[in-house]
Structures are given as C-alpha cells and as structure tokens.
Image (cartoon, rainbow, N blue to C red; front, side, top):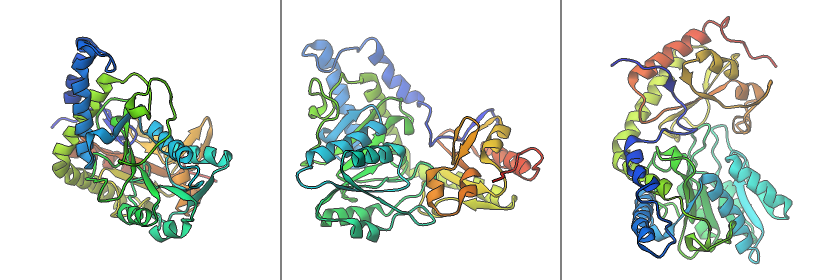
Length: 386
C-alpha cells in the first residue's frame, strides 16, 4: 500500500466526516430543507429523520430515543448538565463533585458555579489519572446533587471506574453525569449498566459533523434550560434544529455501533505498535495515563528532555498534539499532565497521538521511524530547559 502524506494522528481533537455520513446529510441541505418545528409537509418530512437519528444515537448508549436532547456539542451539553442541574435542584443542595483533570467545559462551568455561590469539590487523581471511587464516596454530603466525572480523558485516554462511581452515586441518591465525548462510539457503553443520569456526546469525535452534539437525560431527571425560546427539545434546549447535522450524527453513531467489535482491537493493536516502536528505541520515554484502563486509540507519552512543542514542529507531515497548551511564545504545562504529580517538565514534553478509522500500519511505521530519528538526534529538536 502506498503511503500518502501528511498523516493525521489527532483523532482525539476531531475526526473527518465519514463519506457515508456526508452522503446521508446532503439531501437535508437543499431538497429536504424544512424546519422540523413546522406543521406542514416540509416540516413533517424531516421529523421522521430526526427521530431516526435519536434512535441511532440512543442505541449506541443503551438508551431510548426520547431521552436524547440535541445540542451544539459536548461543551454545550456539559454546560446544560451542570448549570441546569444546579438551578433545578437548588432547593435540595448546592454541592457538586468533579475532578481536576476534567475538560475545560466542566472545569470552567464548575468554577463559574463556585463564583455564583455553589460548593464545588475538585477531586485529585492518581499518577495514572484515575479518580478513587472511595474519594467520591467520602466527598458526598447531604447537600450533594451531582457528580460529574468524564468517561475517558481527552488528553491521556485514562478511563475511570465508571461502574463503581455510578453505583456510589445511585446508592446516595446523587445524580451522575459523565462527559462521554471521547468514549462514546469508541468503546461499548450502556447508561443503565453504569447508572449514568446525564451523558454528553459530540458528533465530530465519531466521524460526524462539527457543531452538533447531544445530552442524554435519564427519565425522571429534571434540567433547567440554559437556552430559552420556543421550547424545542422538550424545553431543555430551544433553537431551530440542525437537521443535516442531526442526520449525520445519527448515521455516524450507527456506523460506530456496527464496527465497534472489529475497530476496538484494530486500533488497540496499532496504538500498541506505536508505543512499542518508540519506547524500545528512544531513551527516557514515559507513558502518561493508565497502562490498560485507557482508550484503545489514544497514546500520550513524554520524552525526557525534548520539548513537545518543538518536536511537533519538526515532525512536519505528521499531525499530533501536545499535552500542553501554548500561548504565543509561552508554553504552559497541561493541567491534566500536571495533576499526575510528575512535575512541570513531564507536561512540557508530552505528546498525544490520537489514532483513528483511516490510519494504517504503514502510517504508524512511518511515524515511529520519524519520531525515533528526531528524538535520537537532538540537534534537530530543541531540548526542554526550565
């Protein structure tokens, strides 16, 4: 097989739209353009397609179609979950539990709620990025209304003990929300098995379009709206529905469900091939995240003494990302890597490889060879210095 450059290995950031998804979407931009809220032929024509998409997404997580609320993405879903529950259950309590390695959509929302007078507990994680379920249990008070722990970390791929956390939440009568943007469609998940009350999803993480997501809300759970106007989506999220996006989201969810059984081991093997190829040939390579309880398509490593920022530039025709966020000329260590307790250098030298549906063994071998060459020839890569 011929190798085509550049190589994309940043599937944790976003995925390309699958051709089958695009094909399903196209009619809804022109021929089937009706507003789903319209009570005439053009509106009715798309209502069935929207319900089908709800069902496809619900099937992926073991839920029912009527419990899927469409949003613009997981960030909005996270905001609705936290702000919507905080307001709706304010008379019951004001305490929310989350953890320090959450996506900024959760952390920033939680900090804003803290500014508004809510009581937020930010639990620490261990060296692998996992929250101790017993720490969750011990943090619960009579005023706790919500636990929000992400299903899989977007940087290091670590998966917490969702089943244990969900069981603890249910035992104490506390709602359990999880940001499933990185998990859903990549590993099997059933909301009943894990006692999940609210679940955030983004289409663009599973080969669907950007700008469309969903929030699963368990029957009986009440959420105060964050967006008002028109009462769409059961009054939870008003606004004209993004019909092409919804149709594409549904198609993407169905494709993921159909290929999970084969795709999970394929990507796990490719990721392991990448890890072994680099770690055996380069000194000072450390794995960030849990060695086994992790996403099958995520690899986050640090190479001691080598700036991830500089290495990414030198890689050129290989698209990966750093575990650190960079502002202008100043590099700042990722809050996720920092939370693991290894010090600032680990964060400034971390690299995230996100594998996906279209990666091949030939691509992985090319990446291994190029990373090894750059890492072992430090004249080509600026070294990290404190």
